[in-house]
Image (cartoon, rainbow, N blue to C red):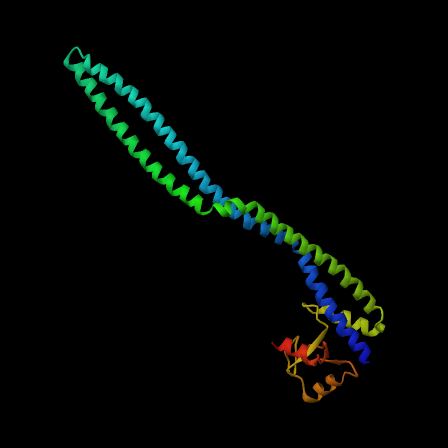
Length: 244
């Protein structure tokens, strides 16, 4: 019976690992999308800053154009002022000149504001220059690492699945049936649970002293009185790790 128990323990460890690997493989697309999203968030924030910079440059160019046009109009108004034939023409030219000068001054103030804002944006881009220059390379490196990790998980999954098949076929039919029934019934897939500090590690129920003795002997199949899982006493180093 000890040999069968050892096989059950090994089978449980293998199944637990298969379960972990399967979950990792099945969630690969989600995790891949999360990596892409993380880098996309960085890229988006950079594009947003670059878009602000481009708009500031475009706004300044538009202001410069309007200043240039208004200066042309101002020159014409100055000529009209010099060649005014009567009081009405003179006053009209004066009002136009005054309005154009104010408009040009307002545009020039806006140009200064745009220049200041552009300097701040350029400074922000300069501070993030390393991130900008290495973003694509880091994205590629992250995806390469992820794909390599996924490939290892798939390879390990295949190996563990084959290992499980070899172990499972050597179990007595009745014991294999009991194991499968327990594993399928539990949400965590645990059919064989270690006894840690006198308790079942699956349901945490304390075991009677006599039952602990029987489990420690390992010469018969003992099940937990609470969750009915098959119990075993792990080696001291395993028990220390599990307790930790």
